[in-house]
Structures are given as C-alpha cells and as structure tokens.
Image 1 (cartoon, rainbow, N blue to C red):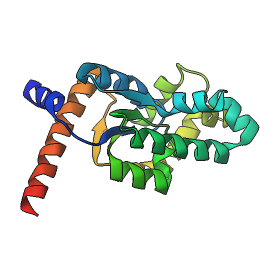
Image 2: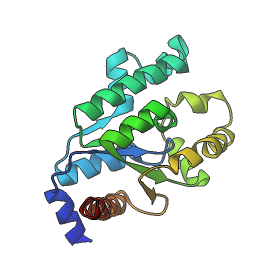
Image 3: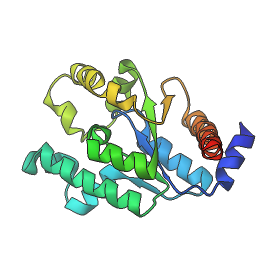
Length: 192
C-alpha cells in the first residue's frame, strides 16, 4: 500500500477528489487528513457555504429554506471545482443534485464514504448543527436518507466502507483506490 500512496503523492492529476456520503460518514475528517498527508489543498463545502452566507447552515435552513441552501451549495461546489481544489468534502445532499453530479464527474473523482445506520447515528450524535436531523428521530431520518440517497451515491467513481476502520486506514484506502483508478484511466486512454 505504501507504493500506491507514494505514487499518489507523485501524480500530477488534474481532477479534484470529491468525498460524498451521508452526514457522519467522515467526509470532513478524512478529507482533511488526506489533504494533509499528500500536501493537497482542502475545502469543506459546508464551511465554505457558512463563509459565503455569513451565518450557520441551521440559520440558512431556518431563514431561507433548504432550496436556498442547495442553490448556494451548487455555486460553492462549482467554484471549488473550477479552482481545482484537490480534496473537497461535500454536504450529504450535494451529490443528489444532477448539476453537482455532472460537474463532479467532469472535474473530479467522486468517492462515496459509506457507513451503516448504527455508525452514522453514533457519529452524528457527537455534533449539533445538522438541520435535517432536528426534524425528528435521527435514526428514522437517517434510515430515510439512506433509502433515498444510497442508490444515487452508488454512481460514485469509488466506494469506500468507512465504518470499522480508523481515519488513517481510510486515508490509506483512498490513496490505494485512487492510484488504481488513475492507473485504469491511463489504460483506457492508451486503448482508445
């Protein structure tokens, strides 16, 4: 695995690494550590949205509604992809937007960080400020989001199960998966 990680560090690829998945899957934490380990730039779309709006995500939802939040999210993701930020952690609903998916497919490599319900419940209980979970029972809401979103998340370029591993193991697994992905892309181009 070290060879693949070294190879990833030396690659000059022109796409962003875009982490997708439900809240609690580890996108922000794994993304930060991945960027730090390989010297890549990093952005968390939720933090970028808060900066752009000048208020919290909960406030955006409460004052302007989810649709306004999703519009702002779309603009932020487009800007980050154009700026060629190397590692982008997206909000849980970002990949559900067809325009976001198209832009991510064009300018990035999507990696679905997948986790099961019990793991998501445990992880999301540690942090407040998740407007979708404030609407009722978190387990019921997460189960519904899984049913709705997992089929779309399944369109990602790479899927990684994050539930029974450390952050470091996940970072290494992403490096391995990306090295294989880019090797395969090179082979496809050679055969065209």
